[in-house]
Length: 640
Image (cartoon, rainbow, N blue to C red):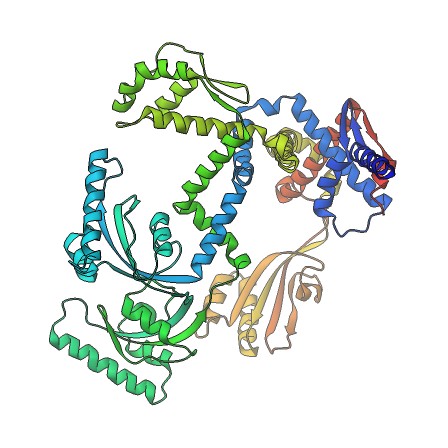
């Protein structure tokens, strides 16, 4: 009894804590939890004091006042805002619109398959995805008969592939796909290969390409990936005997150079006919199984030690020698999890994930179909849907189905058909897809109720967009576009934009004493108007570029050490020898007294100050308009 009483008391205390409000603006109460969610995003490791909390709360109040102002101005009803928020909402909802248990099982399955390579052959009988039932059966019966003949030893798998397979490469390889691993084949094919025992032939399996039978010839622990460099002499397909012998002789000569101790990268750069890699020492991008022709792959993975060099070998492209640069095993699950998720989304597994979500939603929500309404609608529309020329019938608001008592009308289904129909469409299949889409939309509408963290994040995005839009209108854009207001602000605050004493000077950076002597003579000529700085620069750099560099501008004290080191008197102000032996000559052109900057000389700073003033004035109005109450006791409870 005491335990029960204590539990109730603790629960009540927890609820009271959660219900604490730290801020009230007019009739809107902001809870401590909401404030903490924002505060701790950027202040996890900050030592909390009353002063720091007060400062942060001030910023938070300013933020909330601006958002309230935006709401009352109806900015959340503007189409641009609705479109932008909707886009963010779709992105934020994605992680929640998943069957997480199913997706996790797909990740684990894919990772386990990555740890094993499968070697298999296949025979394909093509079937169009929109084939009739009769065409499907003919293809299935054909491949089943081929399988029976192979099992009965009437024909080998390789010969059967060459004779029957619609995969044209089978003529040359007998259907041999060599080794592959997860994500290299469509999912249904991959699953059949991994579930078939070595030496066995699978039953026919259907993919988007048609019907296959698969013979698994080997399974091994995954070899991972390698990075190699190669030296190649091309022969190419159909090369004559002379060309083949030349390529072979060349590769043997290269092998001799390598055996004599020459660097692989040097030999590759000098001799390899694959010039795109030769300039990189023969280096190729890292690869795994199934990415290279079989002979190249087999040789690459046979090298065990880094730096090991293969014997010369031939592929259909020519003769090669390779050296092993890197060998990488299969990474841990945590390391590849994110990459696996992306692959699953792009792979045919992605569709399975969607179907698993729909199955889950059918269990989570009560879906009640209205068969009579559907039958009546179907009777008048099925043929036109099949032809792809369905047009909207008269208004029909009859309830077609309900999802947790939310009614979905016939009209909504009709609109769906109009958007998605095509010649050959099946109205029953479209209805299933329509129900799934409605379930997904309903689930999305429930996310804020089911997931508080999603609701908080969406609110954060909403308020952020409103704040940006209104601040842009009242502060940022206004300060730039309100030229009259900007000019008035500048006129009223001219004393804030003052030049210090300045000098208009030219700095001549001379590489050596000889250049400095020439430049000094040239400056005297410039003063008399007989030469320009451009001509001085050209002459000084004629034999040795960068002997002279010239920089003319207006300087203030502290901006340049050389300008600070001389007296600001018009004319040559003397020579300065630097530590590296170069010389600096300063020519003072003009001395400018302190004064007010023109607006065009300080426009950026004036705009920034004007924006700050506009914001302060805006906030002053907001504080006069809305009552603000901060519960300091609740706020300071964050200090431990």
